[in-house]
Length: 365
Image (cartoon, rainbow, N blue to C red):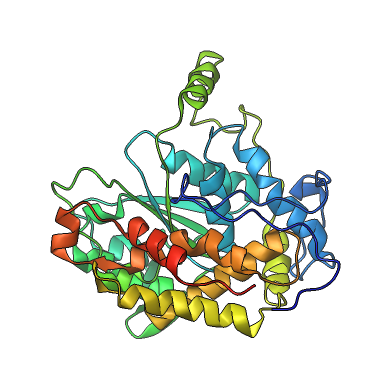
């Protein structure tokens, strides 16, 4: 595959030492710190400079690090999801800052956020809203649920029954809520950022494949290495309060207008036909893997195309490369693979399957 003679520096391909995450985005030149979002024109239109929007979104990593230590890869995955108008599933054991990460991201992006604690007794109307009888007007009025926000934190989404989980299907796919036959659009931007615990399964309801497929990416938050954990304790010893992000110095460095400009720029990223073929070959290879019961669908392939373009744009390029595909393949595809029961008993995981697929499917040069 031909590339421009003066191509900017390439991202290093993802390595086996960190299969769960995509690497953190880097600019082709040292980024200039953007002014606070409050000091930039808000407006309803798209800012004229997508490059400034890119610098602002890359600056999110440094801003979030003031409150969340050592989760740069997870931050990158969430930013990619927002650039693609997608939703993200965050998986990690309790205490690795999943909820704090989402709250800090919303603060640094200057977006409205609401949190739903999913429990076994939660009803669909508690999520989407419902009709309430008004005695003064003798009529039913719609009372909005917490989904009417920009970033919806669905905490422990697998702790609520399927009926309530399904209430999010229309919200995630259509970005609207239909009550009594009347569609009500959600604010823009809108994204569901859901969390779940991969260890404790008592009293949980696994997400069905149809709902998992609605999440653009699934990012994992591992336990921090020793040095990062020491930094976490040092923050708390210095008086850090997770409930007071302003005291930690977290400020808005990007806005919804930056996000709109970035989304428009991502759609202009060129993808060579050979890269398209590579994405399709990876998806098809998962369907014939011996350990796989259900492989990646065409929806999954289009999702990988979207995240690949977003990653290329964040990296300062106007074209996508096979390395961009490899960088986002695990986060985009791991939750779209169903393993055979005997393979799960042998300890095979979706990441293991993807490692094998990435190693065997030839990438275009």
